[in-house]
View 1 (cartoon, rainbow, N blue to C red):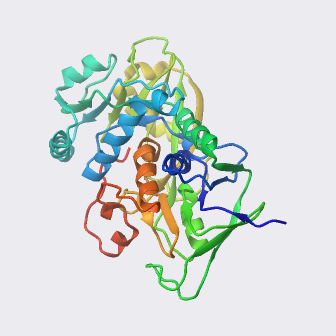
View 2 (cartoon, helix red, strand yellow; view 1 turned 45 degrees about the vertical axis):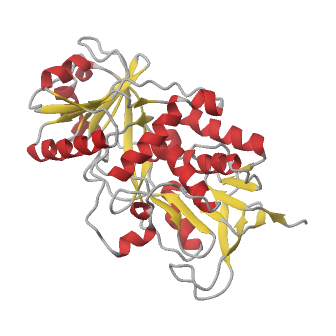
Length: 393
């Protein structure tokens, strides 16, 4: 059997892996193999998120990822060739606690310095943007009109199709079983060895560059190369409610987030998509639906969108966030020479996949990524700075 070789092997066929493949192909690096263990691309966390994209983060590095990514989403069909049903009806953050008011004022000032238009609203102004909104205990809100909702599947398939046309090979139903590293005594800086290939359920692929884009499973891929990654899976739920029998809810696709509780909702066709974090949730790979969570969601939902109290739940699913200790991603070289990671986005990976994929493609090909990579380095966890992304929803 002939030896299969590739310049780059990407592990993970979700939005992040597809983005890296797309940007590598645009830079002329097309001897690339994208591996996905499932029968279809984008069936993991990519397929189970709410599709939201926003500028409103607490850390400048994340805002900058958003600026670049949303710029591409706005031009995606013209640039990549696939429609993504992008609705820029805005994100509305509802604020009711004094500590959150101060944090969001500081974040809004930072976002404006970076060129993002963010409005500070009264409770009444928020209710005008989102008809049916309950304003009990609401002190203020922030709103960015260029935030919005788009189709994660369209984005992933668009990136993948473009990469494939350029020559990238996509192997589905192909599970990675090991990563080979030359030499001995490889440490976190990559001293003593480098990646030499990937073992898979379909055979060995020789390569000097491996990209770990395995999302919630990124830590297990890192372990194969002797690299511990502080990435853990965390279950999050999404529910779909049918149209209400009485009352009203927003007619646009505006994303409304009650920040104190993490309850959020937006229109999904004639229905309403909503969810809320569970403070009692523990790390794990279980993606079955915990229907008991609705008992905690119901009073919050009834207060913030009264019409939802009379609506029927027609569908629900759960997916996994890929959490890091500071809720910031890992992007760049990790461990032995030739091993790169792009994971740990802590719930905002889909929306940052264009910028993150472009940055890593630049790093791999020796180009200037034109951004400060230190907030995304694995080494940052050895020197805690106190920096944490506070805008996780």
